[in-house]
Length: 463
Image 1 (cartoon, rainbow, N blue to C red):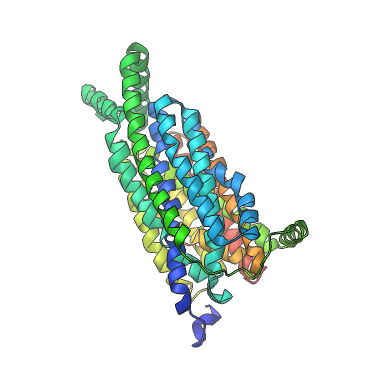
Image 2 (cartoon, rainbow, N blue to C red):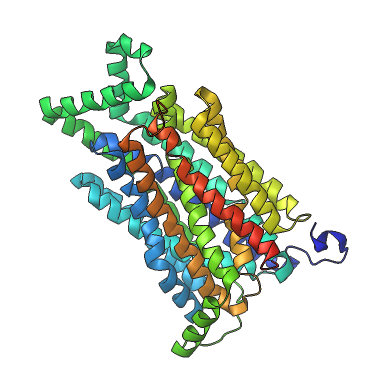
């Protein structure tokens, strides 16, 4: 149990003067949740629209999370040299530009242009995350910092749910390629007696034949589907532009002590201190594995539902929404539990539960496997902000640069989904178990790393 739970005079999560700035910054958290979850379904959508492999379509996630790797450290230097507000404004500007670039990408029908637009968009997200997370941590007493960040992160699933709803109803549900797949099912009633993974392969072959035999009709279908994909991104570009104007005129408190731009000596000194901090370094590694696990579980739930249960893309996406609702409910429960239990052991316990559910995802048949995959979201809800809070504990002004490493670790979401896509493309590795199921051994490995960090955070580092 946490010592705070026995201390009646423990400081509040937020003081009265910080409630308004907390709300202003917490409003940013849904923005990257929306971008993440409106983008996840594009992996499957682009696979069918552009007729590419799972490994190639997973480059959507590579490009999306590459922006974090590119921008995290420059963002931290920028914020440390100026203000948190400057970081928010710069992040919103890049976010809007990246979303708007979906217009030329859809008009030219170039897959690589979409990847570039996503990368620019996430450079903006990196700026926002490098700004918002340490800013929230600094808005009160250090002993309540992890709980405060968990509370702010609870707003993130609101954006995620919105992104999933938009993806399900305004992208996946409107794609002509999905209508083509449904038509092929109707024309081939024998598909009902076949394994879903076999049917998925036959539908992909039918789509390839259609593109070869009727190229003009296929190009028209492709253009219509890319226009459908474009719509939500144009809308979010408008919303983010409005938010930019709101923050431009808003006043936010300065919680960093420095009053001068970052010098080379300060930068070198901070980086040297971070390099000697094992709790922080291990936190960066754990964060990379966590983000990789999260993106794999949420991206390939659509593949899982379609290839193991024969669901349509929109139906499979509805289970992704259930997973996010589970994540959201669990986030509030875990924020409450952190008032009574130490972060490290709670993190380790939930990681072990994630390992068990990954095994269920692989070995349980039918909906039991799908529900195991959904259940992983309950375990993941605590992980990102808790790893963040443990790693940055007691950092002070170093937190703005230290946060760069933790945000850069989000690049784990760029590296692991393509590897999972390759595992799916490679075919079964354990008997007749579909490869989309056995690919979830990768998230299992990630949860092993997180469990070790949770254990070491308490037993070795005393966090």
